Image 1 (cartoon, rainbow, N blue to C red):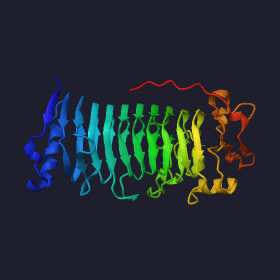
Image 2: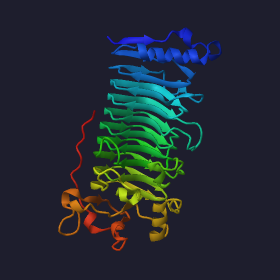
Image 3: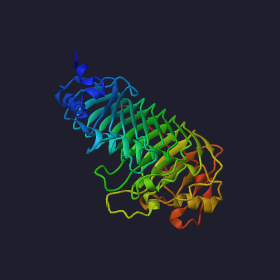
Image 4: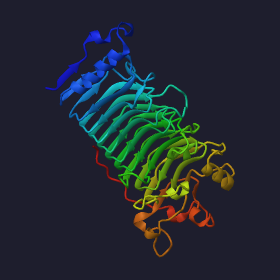
Length: 397
């Protein structure tokens, strides 16, 4: 039988009876003292926390609140630490039924954990679109067997739901809104993103491979059956962050990664572009990582539904300016920059079949910009990209 660690109810009488520091101490003590295979039960209430809470080296531990609207860890007065809650070097950890609000930095960071579940978790910043908000809401990095379900993320200055350098990932039935990036999968392998809602962000869903990271290449990522809509929020990321380059009004961006399938999604109401497929070279940021591959390949878009809003693209962004210049406000649903990896090109000057970017969609505007050739062969609805790749087979964590 699992061991259960409960807080004494005396520790959670009205806040006026006990100092905030004492309550924080009691919570942290429970995180330290819980044995492998045990549970920490967080009771109902709003608890003001001034320093990072940490869980380190635990196995098969559940931290469970009374509900994400009932158990709230409020870090608005935080003076110490870079995260709200930090979980490290563990195995089979479950975080469930509580909220982390107004953390000084990232809300919940989980690093080097094999088996992490976020279930019915909420992260939020109450300051509207502030670059001082923490970068990430739900933030598993360098993890294996990641499950995020029934959760929500609001107000992150980078990504609300972010999974980085991880393997065997599922993000499902969750909601991200009013972040710069709603959901971001970065340098991550074997990931499924499905039945989520991304709305009111700058960009809805991002699948990126970036340079300079310990895990060099992601891929085998399937984004399906999501509702990605009205992500037209202004970009409030701090200058210099990668997501600061994302134009407001973007549904999906696939950047410099391979083996990505996007299918069955409703992608609606974006002012700049519904789906962008691009090389890292489009960012014009110098690449110092010699092992990094900046080109996308083996991408398959099919059976999505699109509805583009009729308004000007984000003119504060270079991509938005380019689309306005080339398309006078009637931007394509799907844009591919057309920059090719020379190592993957066949005798016909196009990608070999196994590496092709395939857009098998009906009744959409689709453009290959030919950006690598100074837009000389820009092509609308290019026939050579109406092709198929093998649908991805996924393995859940």
